Length: 311
Image 1: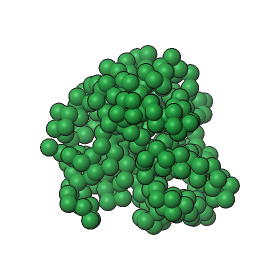
Image 2 (image 1 turned 90 degrees about the vertical axis):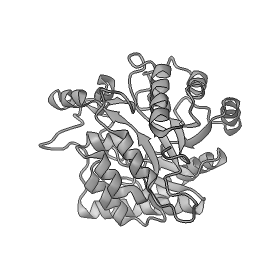
Image 3 (image 1 turned 30 degrees about the vertical axis):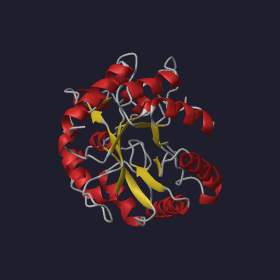
């Protein structure tokens, strides 16, 4: 059995899309939660359709035996001071804390091209995404660490998510940020699919960063679609709609998740009586739910995890 202490969850992006709300709008919050539970997951991340009232959300979760793992926070440290976002960030992490999680994950969406549907997500000759100057990077990293301190003082862990179309997309940029931020305040939300999309080897990236990983997104990539994204110069959202992402275990995907699980299983967690990753593994594969049936997709991914992990 691998990763016997890890918690298995799924993101609501299988049913809906926060970046393009019209996608999956027919899939209700209640349907989403019920199908997550039916598929055998322990928990989930929070989507845009989820209730904002804590007690209402708690009731719906407890009814189905689910827990909250995380809710995305869009950092804007390339644009905004810490004081400008502190109130919103504190409200966000206290909401999550009240729901019983200690993780707050998100990526830097200041100046990102993720939502720009006319801009190619991959431009190998002249990137359209933000490339920071040395001075801009210093300010950015200092602000992320400061937000990490705020989270730490609230008993939460800031898990930074590298993401296509942002200033932290590559392995090198991820490494630079982690090196510039104290591990006490900033950890990594590792995403296998975003590293592959960025041209990296997800296994090598995980080995490099494994001691800083506090949250994991299990995302697969279809290489044939990736080739189309490059040749047709598709935007990020167009790439999603074209099927760039898929679930672990899909034969059309390129990533060997079992190798990733072996690496996570070998982490030495200080102060524990086991030696493997014990936080959340989140199936996250945003797709067009009209093409990839949400419940069927969730069931298929869960079956693969059970076969591969042994639980």
